[in-house]
Image (tube, rainbow, N blue to C red):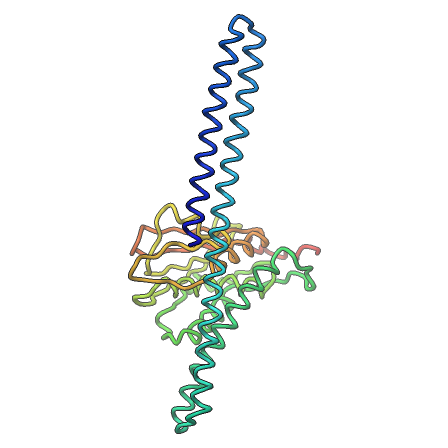
Length: 308
């Protein structure tokens, strides 16, 4: 129903814009025809016509952009509703089962484990939503500190391995040549959030098997880069920039439905830019995996954290 309304609104705005442009053209031609021998009137008519056309085009573009934004917000609300209701319904079902049929100890422990997983999933969704609302609005209580990236990435890898019940060989990190210690200045919790979201995204878009490779390095002597490469679904070239927009989710095919809120990569980009860096994605195409490259200013020598 919502999609039908949105499609109708798009068609209405486009039709209205076209009609206004045609009307403006007719009025301009009439103006010139009626005042064909007056150069000043001709120039004034052309100027007013140009302003009118520009206004109509900008208004139509703005309206279509608002329609698309509302579509993304509707998609986000539907996804969040699903992500919240599903684990809650699962937990309630198992609790009711335990209440009516306690069963043996082995069965109870299995139910408890499932409920803990559902609780973790629910908590992760809530934290993502809260984090998206906090970034850029909250007052920083703590100063930026020096953060060593290799141990932080290794810690995040251990977290997602446990969270998704994966084997250690499924997510690996390359050793840094020469055992160089790489530092950045930033907020450790925010950086941890960014890395966890990148790893979770790589796992989520690898439905046929998780094989993720992480690499830390230096770019142009002044940037630290973290590259996370997966062998998952890959991306169309037109999606490489869109996926970092708030609420945007790359379309999946009919055989693979990917769950999510559309906030994870938006959070990564926001955190990267707040730290003076950025994030980019590359892919050779659908089915050929993706690489996400997080770039942050490298802490060089005895640099001190900037004053808050």
